[in-house]
Length: 70
Image 1 (spheres, rainbow, N blue to C red):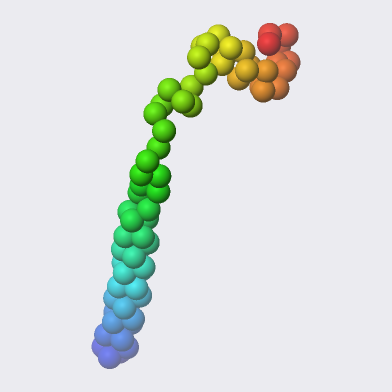
Image 2 (cartoon, rainbow, N blue to C red):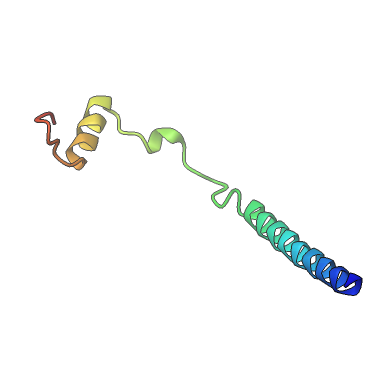
């Protein structure tokens, strides 16, 4: 009975080790892609010059409200 318990514990530890190693490799790979665009344009180039026009554009993309408000 004791021999069976030792094998079960050893298998559980080996499985846990595989999970930890796999997770570590996934995190390491994700961290290497943290900055895929090292030379981005300034933020002003992404914004619309008129804030009200930007809000109107966003509202026009939304579905019509069922409550009568748009």
